[in-house]
Length: 352
Image 1: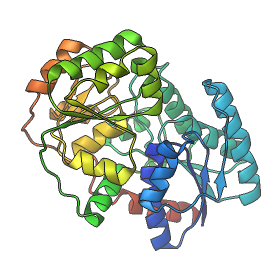
Image 2 (image 1 turned 60 degrees about the vertical axis):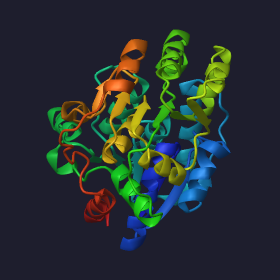
Image 3 (image 1 turned 90 degrees about the vertical axis):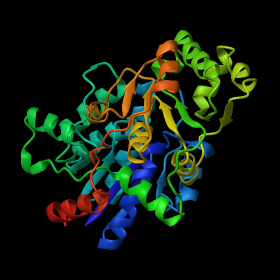
Image 4 (image 1 turned 30 degrees about the vertical axis):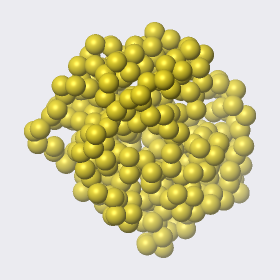
């Protein structure tokens, strides 16, 4: 079986880490394509080097215009040419980014089946970019791999044939546990909170951005802020970066490679984030998650009491930083850490 795996963003790279290992163990021929969606050293190359990922056979150097149409079209044309040359048995796509929908569309137009990892997540905000990408990709996919029960249920309710929907768990859990084990990273309750912030509804709205910055600065709690390049640019434009630099409780870091990220996450007390992926990673490591976005991709985390949705409300963020301390059970909603092997077995059964 020959698989074209398509990656383009940091979350894709962490999942590819586990899938590449599973493919190698099962003797699957994998061709890796990098769409270039996250294209700079901090956002891409550090992950490949830190995780010792195989070098992509194909790397697209796209121009960053800031428009979804330009970006997706450039990736679509590049992926189509690779598909024509390689003729894989199946294209494997991850998540909900523009790379995902571009690869799915290019594949089905050439009658190459698509397998979608992290299918079925729904936030019910139709104009959310990730929601659009996920729904469109699911509609084109022949094999669907939801990673949580609610996503599986959504796909069945949308009349996807049950024999095409497989619930293997979350590859993110595979990758976290593998890195922690191999690098001897122990989970502890440190004296700092980990923070990430990158979603457009926060970075493109000066008032929301100011509310979040004011809350973390005023909290007085030590916060290690892993800053996305686009977030840094937004903070500069809103004259907020200096406020963070001058705050003794805020430590500003770059995006960091995955191994370093896992080290910081493992030692954090709490997680403050608008990232769907970082929320899950925090939960897996037993960290209280403060969600500074209104979007709820994984309702199971909220129901379990380990994720609190506060949005950009300054007072609610402050209160959560000081008072949100869940102590109840943490159900294993993301599986048992064998998702990559289960996905590989399902692909081999259907296309091998």
